[in-house]
Length: 254
Image (tube, rainbow, N blue to C red):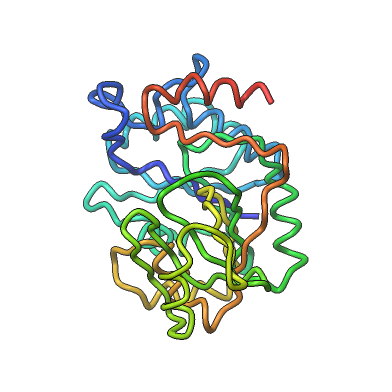
């Protein structure tokens, strides 16, 4: 199976660490983030990984190559000319993936105790065009799913903004606040998802720069974009800030 590791971000929240190195090379428990993620992908049975690069790209490329890809076939998607956001990054990388196979997408700064192999198996046994790992946790931005686990909308509970292609749901979602209600469930996205090849032609037709979350809700009426709920013992850390690096190290121990 393919995987894509998002490592192109500027890492502005991790300054001053990222003043002289990319976010992917910031150390967690004494080891660069990217090494932790590549090892986890290998243990999950992934064989081919595409890594997008931008900020201090050569540091990532040199480090991964010097370690023989950590036992994986690694290809780099070069975004040094222009950052393409999450959706644009996947779109640019499409020719680099092994054809006719799903892609597990993972942010380089996300640390969790997720069984990635199990997530991939759930996706492959489903009819999903995309499977999004979600959980119950406090955040300001949620994905909204219906009783069938299908994505309906994106919602910012601080501003009340709702983005949806479902006109019937728009007003209801504006009124229900941040609680599960009216047959809808609000869940936090983990930054981990699996995309089926059925969506590749649709991605190819998109603009050069776009968010994959915007892509998902815009196409949720036509395609099967569903959630996979994380288990009760789920642990998750966004290591995108200096104060979260120690918490990420704690998650590694699980």
